[in-house]
Image (cartoon, rainbow over all chains, first blue to last red; front, side):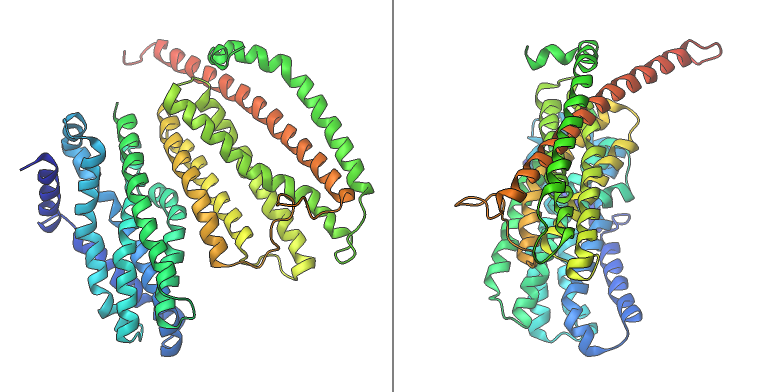
Amino acid sequence: MSPLAAIFMRDLRLAVRVGGGGGIGVLFFLIVVVLMPFAIGPDLTLLSRIGPAILWLGALLASLLTLDRLFTADHEDGSLDLILMGGTPLELAIAAKAFAHWLTTGLPLVIVVPLLGLFMNLDGRASAAVALTLLVGTPALTFIGVIGASLSVALRRGGLLLAVLVLPLTIPVLIFGVSASNAAIVGPLPFGTPFTILCALSLVSLVVGIFAAAAALRHGME
Amino acid sequence: MALIDYANPTRFLGFAERVLPWLIGITALAFVAGLYLTQGAPDDYQQGATVKIMFLHVPTAWLSMFGWIVMSIAALGTLVWRHPLADVAAKAAAPLGAAFTFLCLTTGSLWGRPMWGTYWVWDARLTSELVLFLMYLGVIALWHTVEEPSRAARAVAILTLVGAINIPIIKWSVDWWNTLHQPASVVKLGGPAIHPAILTPLLVMAVAFTLLFVTLHIAAMRNEILRRRVRSLMLLRAQAAPGSAS
């Protein structure tokens, strides 16, 4: 097994076993979405109109919540130092870790969207649109989050600082995610335009995120 | 005189001592000229005297972006060349950029009240300026969470460069999200659409504000160098004090 595949499989196993905490993000997502009607009121037409926005915001906050886990545990048990010293390029190792992280925290959010869509009075087509935009949009959130996670582990400060640094950078993803969902549900924009831009944002964040995170870890750990 | 000669902080301090009085003088002169021209500029036929807020608003908006450019260049200096003054320059520029962004938002909102009838609209330019302000605050927060200046410098440098890539994307997506503001009118093909009677004071004010930024930046860099010296002297004294661990 190549080192990258080993890192990937290890992160997947760690996430699904006891103490992994991958499910917490989904639970948080569920609770945030359930809280919304209490604040807004149980008006079903209003909820279905702002449903995509609520689902996107919930997913954004839930993916932010799990970012801490990306490097903290590895830093505590020393495996991050091994990855840094190993022969595998750090950028690729981070990409493998981020992909595993997305599979265990981002993808579950996409899977529960049809269920949460029922609470928001979204019909099948609308739920599918939100799930599809989240499917291509959550990788961008993860790869942007990787930057914040690496900075906070390099500086040994986490929590709120991470949120403050990461959230402004996610604004374009939120804009295009919600407008692509709305375009599919009510129009009048064609769905393709914001959707392809969302895909582009994910790809750009992949490149920028792993290089910035690798630089942050290299400079922070020396 | 190459930039590397100023890697020695003492030499930079000498340079700052020599240059600052001149800069302060030129800045004051530029402001006198700019304010005089502003006072002579005609009122707008629709907006009346409120159009004069523009002479503060536009230069501060320009400097809010200029501040991030300065920080990005300094970030490259920190990461690529390890220039000792680069992180001092980056740290000094962050509060200045934030202050000018805040001024831009404040003057814009005071201008918006009589013109649009509200202090705040979720217009594209206002919104991206607000996001820029939030990012400045994030950078300042990062500076303040880490005690060791050189470690904070590298983290901030990475965040600054990521921001430099992202700010145009954010700006563009916010534009896409909502456009209500008037389109750009100073820099566009076919010459500016502003009458020279307004354009001249505007440019003079822009020069004056830029000089103000440079002056404050050099002064802030000097203060930061002195602050770091005080810090290392205090650390040395704490180490030498009787009863300390080492």
